[in-house]
Image (tube, rainbow, N blue to C red; front, top):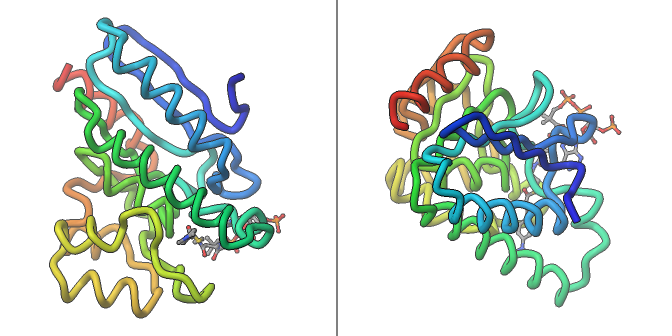
Length: 200
Ligand code: DAK
């Protein structure tokens, strides 16, 4: 069954998956990861699709992280299962056999930043904020972010982001190599589609 919080649109060679729960800033649940896993399986086999775009619904967020209200209901076993599911699906995204672009249209925090880091190209709106605020909840990034941050930005920046929990601007993210392009918020969608069409 499709998850209403996750949308898939296809337009010729371009497919777009939109995290679609803007009231909760597109926060991630088990159902979101299960839905993403199904869409990736479908798109891997779809020979018409050549490039995948990930983005968030609404103007405020790409994904503001794991759903905090859901995290609070988990015991140790179910928290471990959630983390293992998220790690498996995010690994699948990183290994996706066609280019994946994250169009970061707002907050990409916690699990949202971890998802974006598994994409192959990251374009951030100049208004976006990125970071790993899990420490404020007594957690560390649980979906592979500690390792991906280290590889993309180096040890010093990875430690700063994970230990401080402070979000950074798109321009700072660019200077740390966390994103490779920035766009005005009003042109992010079009800029992403142009790049995707070029890759296709
Ligand atoms: N989860 C659920 N709801 C969220 C949310 C989130 N991550 N982020 C925002 N929302 C909801 C807010 O509760 C609010 O809902 P209502 O009160 O309207 O019902 C709505 O979205 C709008 O948010 P705000 O009113 O707070 O909007 P502001 O513009 O004032 O602030 C903000 C935006 C992004 C700065 C703020 O919402 C914020 O700080 N959000 C939390 C960001 C965060 O902490 N993300 C990381 C989550 S933890 C694990 C290890 C780790 C993890 C899981 C497992 N294992 C090892 C098992 C954790 C993963 C994470 O990602």
